Amino acid sequence: MVDNKDLILRLKQGEEKALEIIYKIYFKPLCYFALDFTDDIDTAEEIVQNTIVNLWEKSKSVDANTNLKSYLFSSVRNSSINYLKHKKVEQKYIEIKKLTLQEDSYSNDTYSDEIFDKLNENIEKLPEQCRIIFKMNRFDELKAKEIAEKLNLSVRTVENQIAKALKFLKSEMSDLISIILLINVLFL
Image 1 (tube, rainbow, N blue to C red):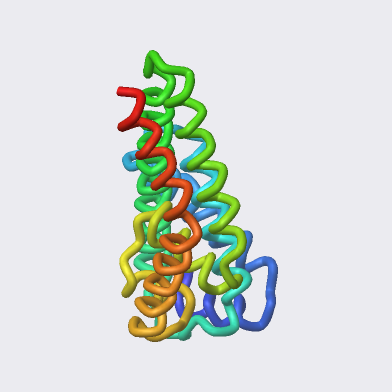
Image 2 (cartoon, helix red, strand yellow):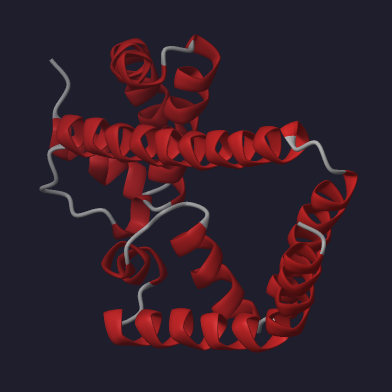
């Protein structure tokens, strides 16, 4: 039986052998666990590998009394859930694109593409932290509290950055959307 505390202490000291032991003990069970979420073995393995690499990278800050098994399974669960959220956002985007493509009018497709292009262009104009927070909120569907925890910020700061992004995007996009709406009304 391997001592949990000893493994963590050895990790904290940068001992690669400890990482190998953790990999041998936990890789397969963690993959099966992640597979329950993802239904894809390659994705499950990637999530587990990333989790173990993250453990190695953060090993100096891991408390020696941490339950290693719980830590790893919780990390894999969270990563799997984030993967599913991301897939859900991708699926929504694909559905929106399909609906857009199903429109009879070429102009509607052109307008939709133009809006998406302009929106992406304006998102990239946001200051880096604001852009990252906005994308995490809108594309990864994370709540302000989750973003705050991931980025080590206050919830209020995250909320302010989201509001700032929305205000900027609204002002940048308002002219284009107004013109498109006007053209649609005139030609319906």
